[in-house]
Amino acid sequence: EPEVTQTPSHQVTQMGQEVILRCVPISNHLYFYWYRQILGQKVEFLVSFYNNEISEKSEIFDDQFSVERPDGSNFTLKIRSTKLEDSAMYFCASSLASGGYYNEQFFGPGTRLTVL
Amino acid sequence: AQTVTQSQPEMSVQEAETVTLSCTYDTSENNYYLFWYKQPPSRQMILVIRQEAYKQQNATENRFSVNFQKAAKSFSLKISDSQLGDTAMYFCAFMKSFEWSGNTGKLIFGQGTTLQVKP
Image (cartoon, rainbow over all chains, first blue to last red; front, top):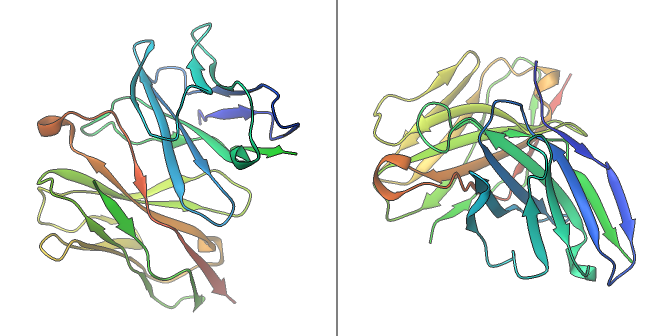
């Protein structure tokens, strides 16, 4: 069964460094998402991406964040200058559609980001 | 703005028994989707069940069913004949409907309920 994969599973970085979190969505999916979950808190929406552009972003997704689909298979989240408060589990998801019957989002296993 | 609230941080149930997880939400939208996602320990989130708000009939998927009360903005999940493999974190989530208000696929999650099924 196709699934969403994410690498790395755990990333440790120093405050102020740039990190890139990588995701490989399900191959025929068209909509891509990033969510994050700070330990002990709820899963929060960061951004949705369709047709090579951001379709919605949350207030969390400030200028330090960017997303890209560089090669038609990977979907990346870049944090330009990490802060301590960026420490969280980051989930990638993909779906065939954004609405209607095929709007089920399939989630990856997550990348745990630790900022020291 | 939409919000989703799960007021039970943890629950436990004996194997083969029935358990109900609660979820309430707030929205001014008339058309939307509600979901229950399951996240087993160290595994990815998977969809358990989905409800379209315009459908009056409660969704069911095998041992999983929902009680959708649109006026009360309540969306509870009932798990019948609980199995050890049902042990997981369960998230209730809301999505605006595509058809009427534009939809980017944004899911709004509740805080989650950790369910422990005991042998």
